[in-house]
Length: 316
Image (tube, rainbow, N blue to C red; front, side, top):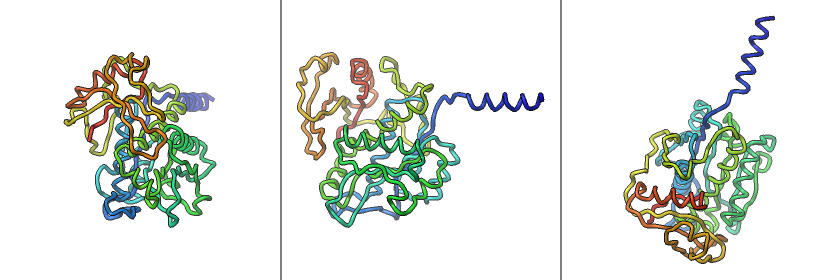
């Protein structure tokens, strides 16, 4: 009887133990000798390079804005981990989420839009995350969403979704066989917007799945990245050199940069019209800095005055 009570007590403690951080594996698809899909435009990057750029931008948004999230990349360079390697890395890390980044292709060049793939529609947490991605793509990013797809839709399974032991979604960021979409994905702004949409969907999901964990960095604090750990040879960009600015928002219609919401920042706001097919054609930034460290103090000020999703970007 005592042994039974002890076992039940141990089980209860394990069941109700609170996690204090989560792990996400970010998987840039293809790489190395496997270029993935190609655009008809010879000047465009192959899918493998776009996947890596978007994946790193997604990870950077997490690092800049969140804490208590450990990021593991399946690759950070032009290498090719096998599908088995990717699955094994995620499972061995006991990750909470696996997000694979890809670009699509179709024999019909008019096909365009984003898709988020899960193994099965019975995987409720994966479907929920995939829906968040597609919602962000269709609303904030202004992309055409083709919805959530599973094995039945594809008529085949995907190894990285079938054999990973955590909430797993494969994101198709657009079709490289569609001229307009390929052009968009080959722009820095397009990559930023897609990565930001993935970040927002991820942020919404983990806050819902783990309500007891504090994820958002304190806008009035030091904005330190000490609680956000990145592994697999990722680069700490806190002292990166070059010209930087703070992106505060985007909009469908032009907004008056002298408006009350902007005045609260206490810094001059610049509005830029983008040459993009996205519904969000206007970008708003503040400041020009020689390093990310120089921009951090103003970033805290911007966030404290109502623009909590602001982040530092490098001006190319």
